[in-house]
Length: 83
Image 1 (spheres, rainbow, N blue to C red):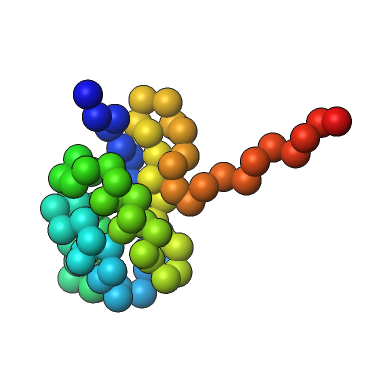
Image 2 (spheres, one colour):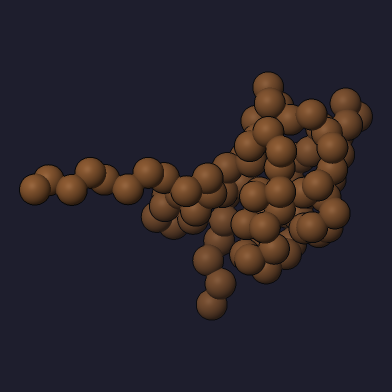
């Protein structure tokens, strides 16, 4: 069973270059301002959604697992080693 994703596009950052739309065609679309919006968080396989988020040149896309709130993209910094 695939994980349910929560995908957020920061419209303060999005410049509308459509890289995410080209990669995850069933997940993203452009709004009237030519900014990306999520039309179906489950529209494409998780790998394509992560690839789409990674292709954003301004880092406007955040992807989390709905059930656990685990952040998949952008990757979080590893905790420092307590030693």
